Figure 1 (cartoon, protein in one colour):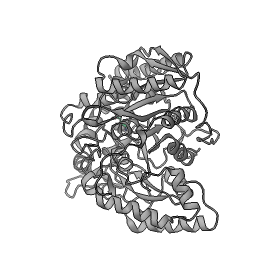
Figure 2 (tube, rainbow, N blue to C red):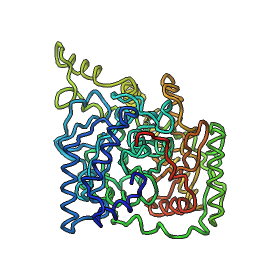
Figure 3 (tube, rainbow, N blue to C red):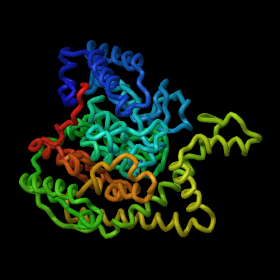
Figure 4 (tube, helix red, strand yellow):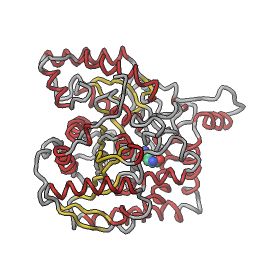
Length: 486
Ligand code: GLN
């Protein structure tokens, strides 16, 4: 059951071989047994989950179910969830019970899924290792001495350790794809604007995008069918026709043109990751794909550009946490300024403060043109690189992360090294393109390796098809860590 696909669970539920209550209890039991060790969940509320399971069972009994009705889903703690503690991994929101649902949560509720718990994450989604969370780091289930990746590390860990069949995440510069890669599961960040940001706590609004993490591409397609949808409350939500993301899964990929950017296989890439990615590319050749070398000349700029723009937007977005309307407020203060100062000093962790400082600096009078405007111009160049390359090939492939999961604490004191974790993922975020990661093997110390697949705008169905075809002939996505307590 814990290895079943979403489709299989859906069939079991529809044919009444299992009820949503039973399924929910089973996953809650796994969480109970494993969460102490992995720390993947910040909040679990058995009663509220079981209430939703009861509703789901009634929906199924009355024939109102849809494909995911009754299936437990874990939600990243960045999504406002009515009646649930919603912390965004921060002390600042450690007392915040959301009075409303994010659009994504509304859609999952409408589909009749069960919220199985809120997953741990880097504070305000800033990080690549989950170590910036106020609630402590998540452990990688493949090796508890290593990080699960970030910032959606709790979601990736929950799926890898079978504490949830699938989960939601968000990705600003790599936070769905990188943890999926490090935990040996699949994840997709859709085209910017397809998933509403309403109720998704803002980090860098021009980059933030919600998406799913699951065991396979076929499962991701079913999750996207629920998550994608226009929402007038998000000004950048796209009025794009609702699609069925499963529709192209079965198409053969013969003749597909795969572009391998030479910049993605250069200095900085570990040998073990390179080997596994090469193996996956060879598999694609066997499936009839044509491999072409391409170039994204501005690749090197993506990390510097990202680390000007994302902190700039974060410094603005996080100004709302002032200890007045909601969130942490210092117990002692002398006047209003002092209250802001103390509340924010106590409520935010070191990485968040670093970003606020960088962001405030690059937006300040006199530096705005030199940093922020310059970065916006370079962002355009990075996006244009992709436009050029998509004239030569249908998709782009490469490694998701330069290395396999690194050890806990290894990069904590070196923010620049940490930032390089997104060297291959940030560019697609800056361009607003869809990207996904699927497991394609193991590297050093038996830690998973992910393949990064970038598609053109709105090519979600196509990249899911490409990933699914690979998963039909390989079994990397079925491998699971050695978890004794299941
Ligand atoms: N690791 C990147 C950062 O720290 C990306 C995070 C994300 O995508 N939310 O900003």
